[in-house]
Length: 201
Image (cartoon, rainbow, N blue to C red; front, top):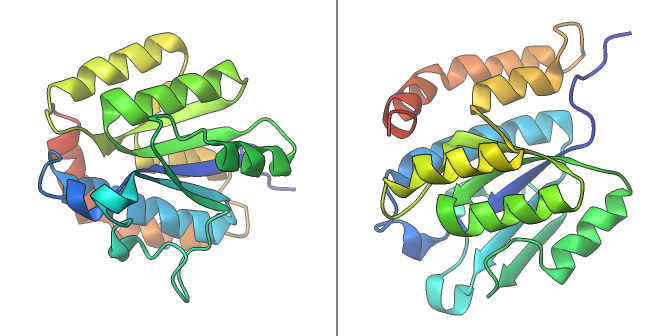
């Protein structure tokens, strides 16, 4: 029987908020990758964790992600924070409710601050972490490769959204593969554009 290659995946969306839009390097491309992974999460029934950083000051999560909207993705936890790591008490409670070590895939901002600290915390707690190179950015683009190099050294897997989607599925024989292939085909040009920008930093 066909089985998925990655067990217990969970998608972590870090601080993709309106007020960051003009400040972050190639912010729309981070959003595009996140939208693609949200589609995959819906197809594969992957739990989603999302945070905002001090939303009273920095605004709500970008509406085009459709988090918690009618007909959109229902997040397991959507929490506001002032700490930089996503591992708030509410997020930790959500992780505990899944009752297993997770394979965490992370997108969002900023690579060298909140994404880094979230990754380090998840690794320390025994989870596997995939940082999506075409799904993270910072205000200063020069921060990104330094952060990714550090996270790789700390034990995270730095990969791309498409690579992770295929690895998550692992077998063309699984029931959802056709739907995943549709997402890959529909986002082909967008994926190419994002890779040529965010992964050439």
